[in-house]
Length: 434
Image (cartoon, rainbow, N blue to C red; front, side):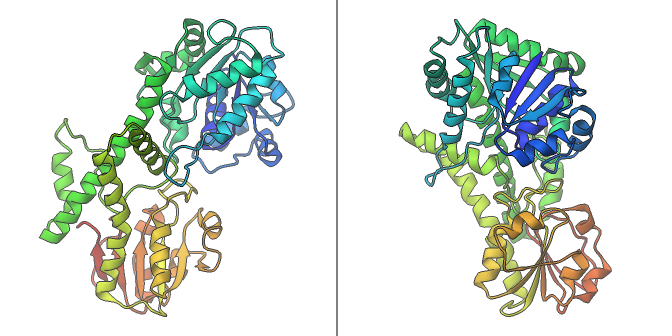
């Protein structure tokens, strides 16, 4: 098929490259000329494992590849279906901000007004249930002066891509959710995903758009709550002198629980869990329902960085002292610092008057936008040199391999938020939940 993807962020760029890898002809539309130029040059605008290789193989604006990028919305007129992959940030109250999606849908609809053939629009962005039906579709109908289900199709295809493994997650999915309110749109979505389904035998969930939207929120909310629950259990284990990881290894053998997402520690961050749990909580309150479980999951998550700092306080007063923050990305394998647990950790150190030196293999420049005045080291060893404390925030492999580098610390106090460092003689080691 001929596909267009509007938006070239973490999701848009990844699915455009993966669609091309499945054999579709794809045009990626974005307003940022620098990103467009990078994609056409076969260069990834984001750090994502496997993405540079796909772009190098498939991208280019010379007509030789299956993927090209452009700033011109008119390019979608030559395609059969368009995937909307635009940001849905938070408002101050946690609710979803649809302004970018609404503007994108209006531009898309205005462009499709010039097309006579059937076209299916698929919402890929994470949106509150009812958004596709009650907001996006009416905008498209207004701009095209046509009727959804009769003149064009509308569908919803939630993404379940983890940053750092997004290419793998797309090409080897645990499920494919196809939400549509008309059969023609559903058929088009099948045409898009059948090559993937055929080669992976992934389960397919066919449903309406509203249910498809809710599946994404339920999926992320459940996982966020699971992480917070094991962190709550881990905090209790710490107080009782029990290793939470031994406990998790045992309960993970219960197939009702499962072993994934049982690594207790600093908690969740990134672009999905915080935004999605906030949005669905805000939506629930609009219907006078108090989501107490999700409120509690968020509260536990917010407390974990404070506990990390409190364990540091038990061993050293860091006022006017050098403190190494090891890891800035919200998880290994990405340069994304959105809602990283490093942010509240650094803020807490600033409140204590510490001299902060931070290290991350790829996320330092992104974190510099948040904290331009702290020091950034070129290596973990440089960060540790002369430090009075070290806080492990992201479990990068090179951080996990540190050993004699701790000997260069002024006082070797290591507080580990990710169970990345091994205990050994010569350092004061404190684990967050073990």
